[in-house]
Image (cartoon, rainbow, N blue to C red; front, side):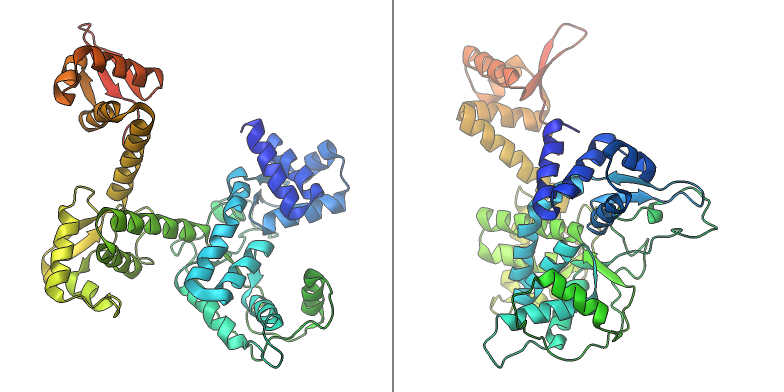
Length: 426
């Protein structure tokens, strides 16, 4: 990890949690995995303060701990990638607002600020904040916030925090597994079946206004201690599913590319296909689950008055496009179709590389670069012939691309020189 990365992580920790958290966080980033005794010795910080800071880091998912059984110290390790994820917090919040309105926005904001919360506490906090901004005499019902919360879980933007297996148990002498590393990886339905199961929560009422300018955090903490009421979700905590947001950003990039390459109607068809398979397609899948033309037709928004023959024409257009946005997977149900996720992203990355080369070095250099991307390996004479560029000009352009590390030169055993593209397609 570079010095600049550590410095950026430290600045993010200071901005969100304060100087004390920054000090301990940067120490863990530089030192790697350490137990509590080593941390106390090397930082010189009070024991109680270190424990509190570690709790903050673990609760916000930027530090993992490895409980290795009774009699063996627990190790703590900061995760730089999860700290740098703080830079995307505004985008996560804006996405939730776009999809689920102000209620969804505040739910995501609260969970990002606090790391993890129970559903009942989140609902009450968000309802109070929404009520505070309403006109006098109006209040936000808990049921409305609960409904938005359930929608976020249904679409996998929120997920339950997995239990920390083995922590504090006398019989957990076995080596640590991923389940014992809190925050080490996002839970999946395979590893944690209750990942997206919403418990039966009994919470009724409306949001309340704050009558004074007390600090919000202190008010919420005080309410949590004084409120003896149970809601049926005690001990069940929820967190933001960052991976789901990243997949949503990927889908939006694909939809935008379709709109730019073809038209708005084509992008709406692809959007519908992605929405239909958003929670059933594996994050690592190369394409979505197959969808029939009949299913796509029934799921299109009513505002798009597209006749069935027109839909078939659009699907054929998407399948035949060189970008390979959509692929055909069968003929049943009027034809089975998939969105080629990996192929589309690879083509988008390739198009970005080509545009960068064209902008920096001109259209002829871009033609040569595009040719090398397609053919992988060509001799200089082949480059001249295929790109239809004079020999001297082709040589100069190849040397310029070579000096910028955009292409590489390979010498064969028979002393023939071959130019090959360094920037291989993803």
